[in-house]
Every structure is written in structure tokens, then in C-alpha cells.
Length: 378
Ligand code: V47
Image (cartoon, rainbow, N blue to C red; front, side, top):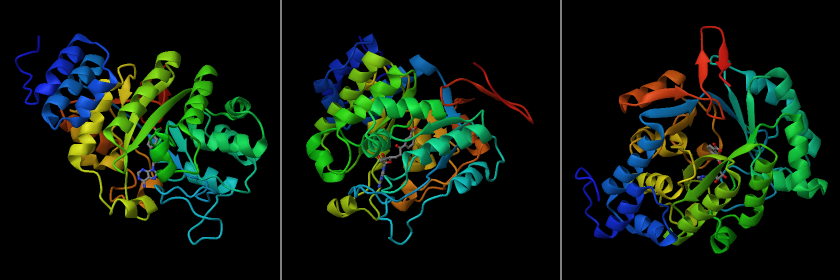
């Protein structure tokens, strides 16, 4: 029995809506029905129902800083505008001291997380990354290090000939707190072959996250949409994430990432067709409905724009990510959003939506601030 206030125009959504309201798990076919529907308000209503059942009007955010130690990359993924060959214009690699200086620069709002990702550098030794983690932990002991995508971890395994499991153990010992969700893209091999044929496949991405979870670390998961993937590819991607989450419960959040076309080979292939507001909100809503075992869905304001991210809070998202400070991956691909937002700006977006801002750390524990101190409640 559907509530009277839920207005559904698309009759194909009715049986799916019944299952959502009953709290039942959706199948791949039902996921396809969601993607194929243009009844965005009904999708949003249902996703918001799940979001409010889990979190009420609470919206999470954090105070974080992105650090990209190098953009030099041996891979040449068609989706990417960030990576450079070592001698290409704009190629950079931070000396460790520089990375430490950047981490602490403009320390106006004490950050609780450094989000660190970079290219697959042909010459940097594995020790560089361990020293980076150790040096940051020593200088900023209270800051959580969310660092290195599964693609980077697998690359360190390749260059050291150590097992991925061993790489993760050494990194955890050096201060690694959790893994970010990058590099997942779209799991379907035929799509992966076109958009990022130099990257690890789905199996290794999922295995790396599983191993991290088994070592007691959490991670996040992403999906890159809005290029050449089909609705079925997206459903397949989400259900593979849901399967792993059933086994490990290690994913904290899912983040749908809208493809930005500028300066990418893939952008040329799709005639620089960017995602639309409709597509962005639909992806947030479908993720909320299919990923019934993920606690959080993040509307990453950097890629959605603060405007769409704010609206996404009514379409299933409960998290806006953070202050970020100097984002590079999306801005190299043409993002017109600011490179950072202050805590106060994020809070305003949340309050205007009628929601309650909740500052969290990486693990979603509440952060309390006084004038001089930041404390995380454990
Ligand atoms: O893996 C790269 C994507 C990802 C482009 O874990 C692009 O909380 C769009 O994963 N257009 C890295 N996307 C960023 C990422 C992320 C971001 C925010 C939060 C978290 C988290 C993770 O960015 C890459 C790739 O999927 N990407 N190039 C592009 N041109």
C-alpha cells in the first residue's frame, strides 16, 4: 500500500515503490526500471524516504583538505585530465617537505581529514608514500589519513612485488586510516577497456577494498557516470558494491561522480556532452534505493556544484563531503565550481534545505569545536 502523498506518474515504478516502502531489497531488473524512469520526483520521494528513515534531517559534512602529491602517471586513461607524462608541461611531484607544508598551509579551520590521491609515478619508490604517511601523522597526529585509491595500492604492489595485502599492512602501520573510493569508474570490462584501459579491473579494485576491510580499515566507493556506460552497466556496478558490502560492511559511503569532459580523450568521444541536473539527481536517488546496505550517499559538491548538491539532499544524499581546499582532478577536467568552501558556507547550504548540519570525522563520528580545540567523540 503506497502512501497517498506519494504521487507516481510512471506505472512501472509502482511495484518497485511498494518494495521500497516495505524495506525489501531491489533486484537488478528493478534497478533498471529506476534508471529508465523519468519520473524524477517519484524517484526522489522514495530515495528521500529511505534517507530520512536512516538519518532524519541530519546532513553530514567534514572539514578536509585534498593533497595530490603528484600528477605524473604511467597510465593514460581517456577519462582523466589530471595525469601527465613526466616531462609534459604542468607535470609536478611534491618533495615530502612541500607536501607537509601544503598540508598545514592556511590552517584556518582545523581539518580532521587529509584526502590524498595521486598519479602512478614511474620513479617514486614505495618508501616515498610510507614517508608521506609517517610525516603527516607525526605533524598532524589527530588528522585521519584517507589515502591512495585501490589503483594506487595495486600499483605499489606491482612495483614492489609485494602482495596487495602486505602493501596495505605496511601503509596502515605508517598511518593510513582508510581508502578513498576513486578508481572504481564503471566495473563493466567493455566500458573499462575504453575509458581506463590502463587501470586495474573490477576484480582487483574490489579485492583491494575487501582486504582493507579485513584489516579493519574502512573505505568509500564511487561510480563514474555520464560517459559511454549503459543503465545496465550502472546497475551492475552498484550491485557488485552491494555484494561486497554484504560480506564486509566496510564501505562508509557511496559517491556518484559525474564525468567532466574538458581536456580528456573520452570527452572528445562523447562530443563534450556533460551530465545534466536530471541525470545527476537520478544517480543519487537510484544509488540510495539500490545500495540498501550503505549508510551514506554523498553529494560531492565539487562535481555536482553546490546548487545541485544542495538539492540532492532531497533526493537521497545525506552528506556533502567537506571543505576540500584545492581540488585538482575535477578542475583539470573543467569544473567551474570553487576549489574550496568554508565550514560556514557548507552549513548555510544545509540549513537552507531545512536540514541539521552535522560535522563528522572520516568515520562519521561527531566532531565538536570550541574556539581553540577540535575533539572527535569516540
Ligand atoms: O577515480 C577522474 C574521477 C576520481 C574525471 O572517497 C573524474 O570520499 C569526472 O574518487 N571527470 C577521484 N571524474 C575522486 C574520488 C573521490 C572524490 C570525492 C570523494 C571521494 C571519497 C572520492 O575522480 C577518479 C575518477 O573516477 N575522475 N577524472 C573526470 N574527468
